[in-house]
Length: 190
Image 1: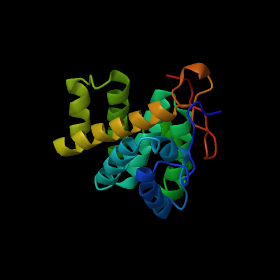
Image 2: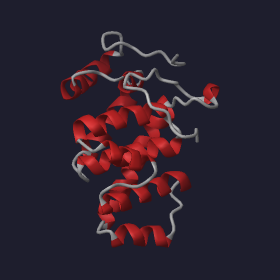
Image 3: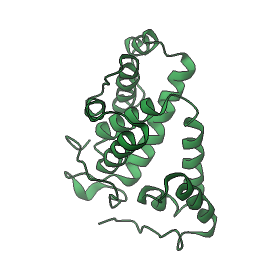
Image 4: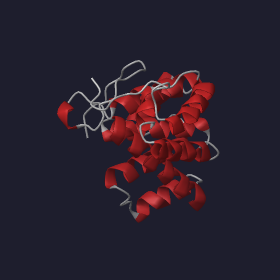
């Protein structure tokens, strides 16, 4: 059960209502993660702005692979459930690729480098090595795209930390947002 109230689109703060309507138009529903963020119109606006800007960067399959990998690294069942669903149904990655993303890789060699780098950014809190940078560059990513990968990690860390649900250490999560996607569990809580 969620520790922070999840408003309905109708009970959300007035400034959040048009933002939630935009989410509904885009996705056909308003997932709980956006409804929790809607408690703060500024947080929701920032999340949606970052999400919209990053949608113009790497391809959707790579973005979803990164989101799955970061959720796994952060031990966030909500993020893992949501992004696996979105990856399979919207980005059209394969079940094998979703499973590989959970392990920090991909069936696509270039995407695998981005996913590995994203996991390292998340796990090291940005303390990546020269070898990590060299590997992602060698795979063909520009410095601008490396910045975008880091931004994707940051976006997913925010939503993972806010909505985190995990089977272990269950009491120490911020919102423990009710999962409204087919439920998956991370291998271990971070």
